[in-house]
Image (cartoon, rainbow, N blue to C red):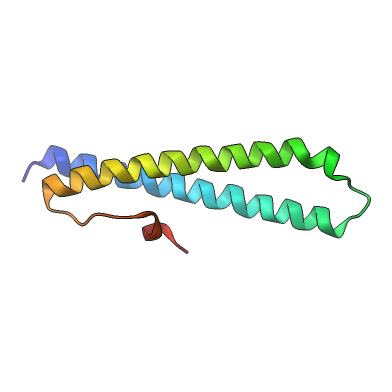
Length: 92
C-alpha cells in the first residue's frame, strides 16, 4: 500500500467533512435567522436580504468545496483500497 495515497485519502476526507459541517452550520443559522424574521413583523425583508444572500453564497461555496473533496476522496480511495463516499455520507 502506498502510504502517501492513504494520507491524501484521509486529508481529503477531513476537508470534505469540514466543508459539510460548515455548509450545515451556515444553513442552520440561516434557518434560525429566517425563523426570527418570520416571528417579528417589524423587521422587513429588505433589511435582511443582503445577509440572506451572503449566507446562501457561503453555503454554496462550502457545498462546492465538499463536492470537490469528495471527488478527490473517491479518486484516492480507488488507489488505496478504501471505500468511496457520497454526499449522503455526511447526512445528519
